[in-house]
Amino acid sequence: MAKNYSRRKKSRRIRFLILCFIFLNFILYSETKTLPQPEFQNDVLFLNSFFTAQIKLDADSFSDNEFLKFPQLVIEDAALELVESEASKLYDGILIKNKYKLKKTGDFTLEPKLILGKKIKKLNKFSIYVEPPELSVNTKFKWKIFSDKNKPVLETVKGGRYKIVLFGFFYIPNTKINSIPFWEVNCQPPENSILETCGNENLTYFLFSEQGWKPVGCFYWTPLESGEQRLPSPVLSIPSKNNTVEKTFIPAEKIFVRNAGIVQTDEFLNDEIAKKTLEKTFDGNLDVSENSRQNKNIDFKTLTEKAKLIAELRQQEAKFIFPMKIKNRRLEIEKELNIIQSFSVTSIVLKKAGLILLFLFIFVICIVFALNKKKKQKSFNFVFTVCIVCVFFLIAVCLYFFINGKYKKAVYVPSSEKKSRFIYQIPEVSGTAAGELKIGETVIIKKQNAFWLYVEKSDKTSGWKDITEFIIID
Image (tube, rainbow, N blue to C red):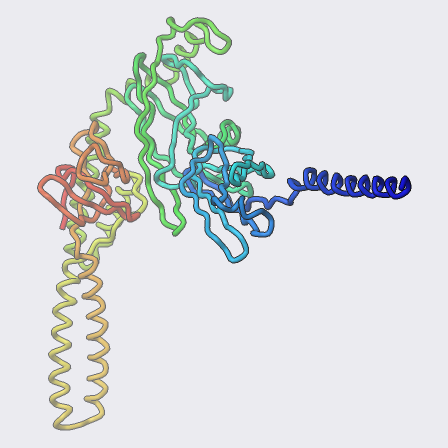
């Protein structure tokens, strides 16, 4: 009896140990199932673009209770804004897709979580890098002011000479970061200031000054008056993907300029330095500024007179068959006004002569055709062929003259120097600038209303401009 009892007791202990082992395994290893990890796009990510993360859950990996409610993939970060979340059943599990909008630039480490019923399971972290938007006419630009030693300037002083750098917030691939292209930046000097260009080599210093912002233009700016003053209003020619050039206008910023005596002494600007800077600036530029003010009207009148002469020469050039002297004179004046490209002049005489010759050859063809029917000689066939070739040639010439003269042309002659030289996307001065005209520049008139002209420049830039600032030549 004692032996049987001890055997039963021993077998009970063994069964109890086996049950304990199974129970411990269930507790310890029930949560150690291999979790799937989210998949995400490895392409370049841009600000305000969309980012997609997805995760696929196998049906065998989790119990049925965990799939009673659709699982959720949660990624919380200040740089992300959840736009759309969807879960779809597959034959072997569930696919969860989350779509986010990227709200910030920079490097971000994301911590995804998977919600299964009441359980929250952390997934592996991953990093993304968000770049600024690609370059376009909607790119943001701003001015930053520096001293000659490339140090940021907090206060500007009347008469001080500063380096102003135009920065754009856009993306450039890492392979091209050391060879940023510098585009044409057109700036007119604001009132009460002197504006000088500086070389693009000065911009390489500012390549990594601020994350996402790239330097695109550099000028030396000297304010001649204190108080609230305007910085330049640049117009940029930006190359686009389809090998065309688009122009964007940047509104003027205002800053406060102090008198030299008001600024307190600090590490980069004190009263003595300000005074010397002011004296140096005025010694070097006083004659220039005074002469420019005194001769402003004279210079403007000279430019407008040359522009009027261009309009007159174009009208004369159209009246001659061989107007080489007039054309050379016109091109010489356009070169003086810094006009590189210009529309050609269509000769009225050649246009009329082409039409007359066309009708004449058609008449000759009719006669030759009638005679050829009667006599049927080979010489008539030859003459007929020559006339046909001449007719086709004259038709091509007449078509060229028709297309070239379809729209009227006009020469830009502003009535006042204070008027803006920009053309606008809408017939209002408050509209966005589409380009800038040069005095004496010839344009094509595409549309016209009572007060405005819709014109096109030789570089295909087009916009609206006040009708009173043009001389219509044909």
